[in-house]
Amino acid sequence: MTPKKPIESLTVLTDLVLPSETNPIGNMFGGELLARMDRAASIAARRHSHQIVVTASVNHVAFTRTIPLGSVVTVEAKVSRAFSTSMEIFLDVYIEDRISGKRIVANEAIYTFVAVDETGKPVPVPELIPETELEKSRYNAALRRKQLSLVLAGKMKAKDATELKALFE
Ligand SMILES: CC(C)(COP(=O)(O)OP(=O)(O)OC[C@H]1O[C@@H](n2cnc3c(N)ncnc32)[C@H](O)[C@@H]1OP(=O)(O)O)[C@@H](O)C(=O)NCCC(=O)NCCS
Image 1 (tube, rainbow, N blue to C red):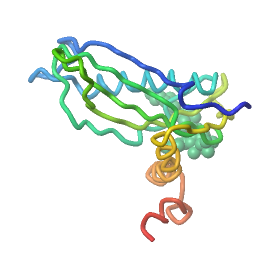
Image 2: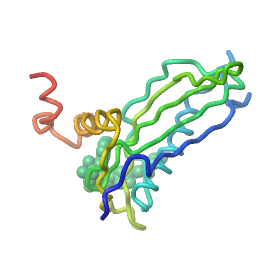
Image 3: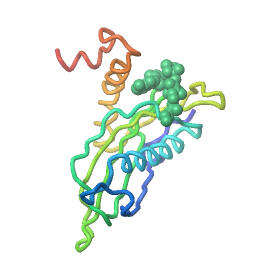
């Protein structure tokens, strides 16, 4: 399989926050944002692998900023690392200042998707070659995040998480 660049999976999803998507104090529901991020990440994983993809885990979500009713929300998703059958997807979320049009960082998240065949069996995905400094740093940290996710899911023993353990040595 030909290796791919992160830019090849870039997915940009822009939409408004409607009244039905807000909480009683007029800010976007976390679950609505999670759903938008899942959709964007799923398209990015599909663009990278050209396979059916399923969400394996949500590794990290930081709701750092409230998103008010009427905001224009942009979710950008890109594959940050590909392993054998799984892909880490990094999501950056922005809102736009109505007057200046400037983008403001609202949230970020990291999802893991797995490519599967029609029976749900994991299948291989192409390697990812990072290009920019940011892509390289996200790529380099992805193995430790994968190990943490597997340890928390009970799918890996902590003693085998070598990359993760190296953080504490
Ligand atoms: C995700 C799924 C395909 C993994 O199947 P599995 O039998 O555990 O397969 P494996 O153990 O071979 O794991 C496959 C890959 O997923 C990775 N993986 C599995 N669970 C993971 C987790 N919690 N965090 C990070 N990676 C995970 C494995 O490390 C492996 O990656 P690699 O091949 O790149 O090294 C399976 O659990 C599944 O279908 N889950 C339901 C998915 C779904 O319906 N999502 C939507 C929820 S509504």
